[in-house]
Length: 343
Image 1 (cartoon, rainbow, N blue to C red):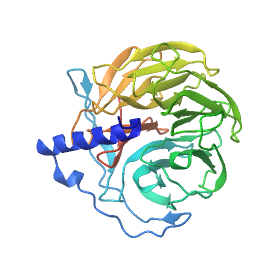
Image 2: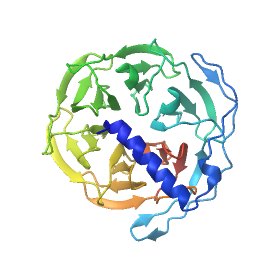
Image 3: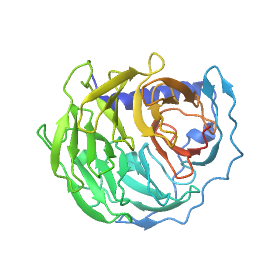
Image 4: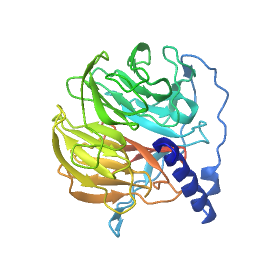
């Protein structure tokens, strides 16, 4: 049986082939190489985003809220490959881990690519993101980027300068087998999931290991393949599990609070984010939508449907929100980032 990240890639390929056979917009699936960029610490890219799109529609059909995005960043603008993690800092600067290219990209609030960190390797500021990985921002706008091919998390300053890294390959405290998700709590502690080991590890802001919680299993407080993670302003921690199809809520110290399953059979939760409304948003990788829940796990609605048009998804992964309340979503199979207004 392939490891979880490989299984997700196989699902993405199968979904993409099925969608293409149904007659989608072929232009949206083709990967068009972007302009040549130098490989180094940073590269400034004078690119403009695709045309700003019309105001969103909020028509609800069969429990789904259909939205039009403000903008879409796709492979016609820059050669995205498997974008996964996404985070927004206090200045509405957007950071995307373009995992297939092992690079970090900065985007402005209008969807224009500003710069990238694109050197592949294992040195400071280099990445080997191995197909999946998330990004988080702390209260000082420092970035925490999962670099799972190197079994570490890198901490970068607000402008992308390398500060430190923590982690090593292994199963012990402070070590990673396949780090995936990352989130920062209100006091700056860093929580990291590992989809090859059933725990959440917690570090201080400089990367020193503090404690962990979770154990193998399907019961409350247990994990099979924890993936996405988000922390609410009140300190509660929400963790998705790709294998058990559940989202679990914990205190910041790791005490189990409650759990719920995804809203439909076959759903596979990936990225998790807390919206400006205080609700919990979960990317459903297999069913191609974003599910919105109350903080106590009550289903509210489902955002988006499967497809290749603006506002639609194939394999959504990462979710973040800007200061205007727009939802930013990465789609790994479509190689897009979308900025969506939500009701």
